[in-house]
Amino acid sequence: MSISINNQTRSFQKDQVKTFQEYVEKSLSEIMGSSFLDPRLKSPDFEIDADIRLVGETAIRKLNFEFRNIDKVTDVLSFPALDMKEGTLDSDLMPYDFSFDEKGKKHLSIGDVVICPERAKKQAEDYGHSLEREMVFLATHSFLHLFGFDHMNKKEEESMFTKQEQVMVAIGLPRNGEEKKVRTEEEQPDLSANDLHPVGEMLPHCGYCALIGRPNVGKSTLLNCISGMKLAIVSHKPQTTRNNIRAIYNREDAQVIFVDTPGIHRPKSKLSEFMVDSSFRAAKGADVVALMVDGRFGKPANVEKQAVETARKLKKPLILIVNKADAVTKESLLPLIANYSSLADFAAIVPVSALKDDGVEELMNVIIGMLPSAPRYFPMEEVTDQSEREIAAELIREQILHYTNEEIPHGTAVEIDSFEEELKEDAIDSYDRSLIKIHASIVCERDSHKSILLGKNGQMIKRIGTAARENIEEMTDCKVFLDLHVKVRKDWKNRQVFLDEFGYKQKED
Ligand code: GDP
Ligand code: MG
Image (cartoon, rainbow, N blue to C red; front, side):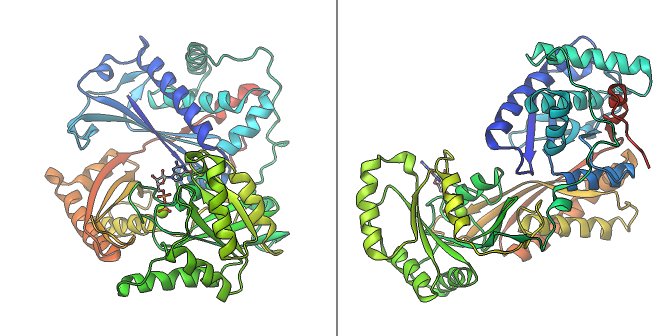
């Protein structure tokens, strides 16, 4: 059994995701082990997979509207991949229900779960229990939907409720006795973060921070840490970050837009000249320049000197981030700080461990303190601007429409499950990729759509894949491996009816 969690929100932090993962694994394996589950799902020949996406209020509202025509934020949506009724498969599993991983192992997906942690947080407060319990509860509820349980009538509801609580007790998250009465829908504030914090709202601190530094010092790791999610690709190999991927950090009173530039190099070739130039450009548009260095190396080299010079020429305030503080002793940082202090007049020198999330909050306060008052540039929910990932999804979608002659309706979506870059052995920058491996899912609403998409002997999906791959290769200027997978999300289901029992009424209009 494997559950992949794709966290697309900032409101749920890395350590929370980790605990959540542990619990949902227990929850799913508890359900898998129960007697009510179809024995055909318990075969050792394949592994059961489930995907959980954590999304913001805007995203879940959009999905709720797309799939259910209800323009409201909700807590959870379930998209079963299999036809099941109360734990039993409607029919035998078919070859197309399975997929194979790189190692040749067979997998069976039971479907997707989409949860909105922000909404879960509000509900947890209403019920008077922990966010952890609420999140795991929502996932468990959703798993049961994936296995064909429902709550359309009292009898079904009772059966589902009982199973749900059994699982919650078994995994160590029972109800804590008295639960508070929940708010009714009328009392329920239905404001998304964006409604409360519109673009253009004047903020005391808002602006751009150019994050520069040589490859491998930990820039991507820092950005990921700041956003509580994976934004840019982090790797032990240098320079896996695309030019100018921006991470956006939001607070009620501040917004920081990070420009993650390629490292600064001494010009060796046209390409590295370009890279120096693009770091320069990034710094030019920024309110603050942050130079990141690796705390294990005390002496500034040309690269760092150049960065300092860039900031000086552009008259930008400069701060020094000394990363990987976890890997060195405090004392050994002193000569480093002395060396750098003699090089430039830093507005601040902040040691951090991006990896261990140590000192990062202090760093954010320092950066924010240096930003001018300005209008909010991006919506609260936005964490990054359009990436190659999203463009790749668009290119795949384009080929689906092309080859299926639009037989496939607009309910079809393309989701990029993973996007991994491999660099050439002698890569000097992020453009020196040898291969991009993309796994993507085409999500449709019906089995009939799935068979159109697959085509006879899989011919259709092959054609779509080849054409899309060629276009992605053109866009990225790199060899691409593209793995396409078709998923059916038949029936969305959610928890609203179930919540009626608690006096939580959903207005469906
Ligand atoms: P970038 O090229 O500057 O974007 O660097 P990455 O973020 O890709 O990080 C390069 C390597 O340094 C990765 O293996 C990270 O895990 C590691 N790294 C990043 N931050 C830290 C840190 O604070 N401590 C330690 N020990 N390693 C780190
Ligand atoms: Mg990077």
